[in-house]
Amino acid sequence: MATPCVLWCLVLVDLILLSSGAELVQTSPSYTPLCPGDRLVLTCTTTTGSTFWRIPGQSNEAEPVSGPKVVEGLMLNVTSINGSTITTTGIYQSINVSLNGSEVACAGASIIAVYATVTITIADPPVAVTDININPIDDSSILITWLYQQNIIQCIVNYTVMINDSNVSSQYSSIGNNITLTSLIVGTNYSFIIIPIDTIGREGPPSSLIQYIWNVPAPVVNISWYQVSSDSVTIWWNNTE
Ligand SMILES: *[C@@H]1O[C@H](CO)[C@@H](O)[C@H](O)[C@H]1NC(C)=O
Ligand SMILES: *[C@@H]1O[C@H](CO)[C@@H](O)[C@H](O)[C@H]1NC(C)=O
Ligand SMILES: *[C@@H]1O[C@H](CO)[C@@H](O)[C@H](O)[C@H]1NC(C)=O
Ligand SMILES: *[C@@H]1O[C@H](CO)[C@@H](O)[C@H](O)[C@H]1NC(C)=O
Ligand SMILES: *[C@@H]1O[C@H](CO)[C@@H](O)[C@H](O)[C@H]1NC(C)=O
Ligand SMILES: *[C@@H]1O[C@H](CO)[C@@H](O)[C@H](O)[C@H]1NC(C)=O
Ligand SMILES: *[C@@H]1O[C@H](CO)[C@@H](O)[C@H](O)[C@H]1NC(C)=O
Ligand SMILES: *[C@@H]1O[C@H](CO)[C@@H](O)[C@H](O)[C@H]1NC(C)=O
Ligand SMILES: *[C@@H]1O[C@H](CO)[C@@H](O)[C@H](O)[C@H]1NC(C)=O
Ligand SMILES: *[C@@H]1O[C@H](CO)[C@@H](O)[C@H](O)[C@H]1NC(C)=O
Image 1 (cartoon, rainbow, N blue to C red):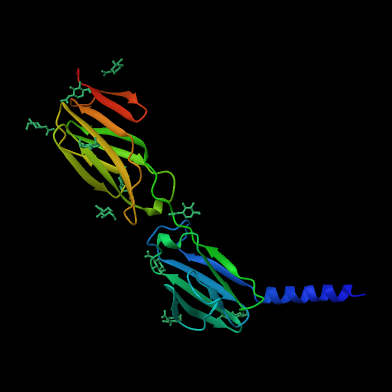
Image 2 (cartoon, rainbow, N blue to C red):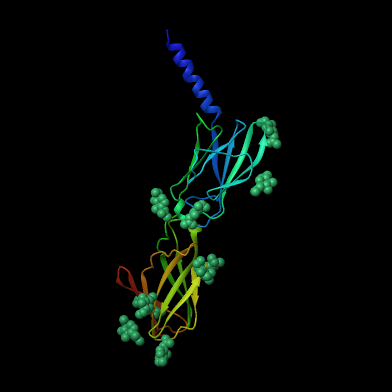
């Protein structure tokens, strides 16, 4: 005889939970994981006429939001109100690695509420570049190209290319995934490595060491590759012509 009441109570609680629910989405950037330093914009929509946010590091249980305020570095604001539908945004101007794994949540009520949650994930340091290619241009310059295939490409701001000849070590920076080296001296042994750098200056592992002997006639006829070991390649050009 008590069964209908139990069912009814469950339905009632479900209705309250549904009506106090919320939607929380990452509006910007368009990718995850995030790069350190990214501006993160989260947008919460509730239909109860009120909005509560849970913010990493905050001491109280849930933060009611009805106007602009900053809580633990998260800039909260109401962007639109349409009847009982309220849209709020939470913005981290510059996300940092210490927030990795933290949860941001929002709901339409402070108690008996279903919180919509976004977990912040931040990209690991860069991985190594792959598919390094050497393309001779003329008798004193080459184009080196490579690929960055894994991880989050948006997090790479530039690449450091380190070049040694028998006398000196030089360092260049390239924003794209290629570099043109000029003023090469015939008969010199060169070696280089390529290191990706991310938004907060974290370095990826160096590419395999590429060694080559610049011994090229014009025009370039034959390029030979010699695999010295798994991470070392010697390249030379046939200069018999
Ligand atoms: C990381 O960001 C949060 C929120 O903006 C801030 O409270 C914290 O101090 C920052 N941590 C570091 C190490 O910058
Ligand atoms: C809060 O949002 C309103 C409406 O979009 C805007 O006019 C106001 O400048 C914002 N305040 C802050 C501090 O961002
Ligand atoms: C407000 O909500 C109503 C009903 O959902 C919708 O028809 C209307 O276009 C909304 N107004 C604005 C300005 O978004
Ligand atoms: C962020 O957290 C994820 C999941 O725990 C982890 O795989 C990743 O390595 C962390 N990133 C950083 C930068 O610590
Ligand atoms: C290295 O130094 C020697 C002696 O100064 C010079 O003759 C040679 O051209 C230099 N090699 C390169 C690649 O600069
Ligand atoms: C080198 O990289 C730049 C920047 O990404 C790009 O515009 C250019 O087309 C690339 N050149 C070659 C030859 O790959
Ligand atoms: C360049 O490397 C080759 C092969 O390792 C070596 O035989 C040669 O002596 C080197 N030349 C110079 C100038 O270091
Ligand atoms: C260049 O020479 C320095 C000093 O000998 C060495 O530490 C570095 O690994 C070399 N880099 C390359 C790309 O060969
Ligand atoms: C490459 O990125 C590093 C780290 O952001 C920066 O210090 C350096 O100036 C950049 N180099 C170029 C040529 O943009
Ligand atoms: C290029 O090298 C191959 C193999 O060593 C050889 O058969 C061919 O004749 C060479 N071509 C030229 C133009 O030297």
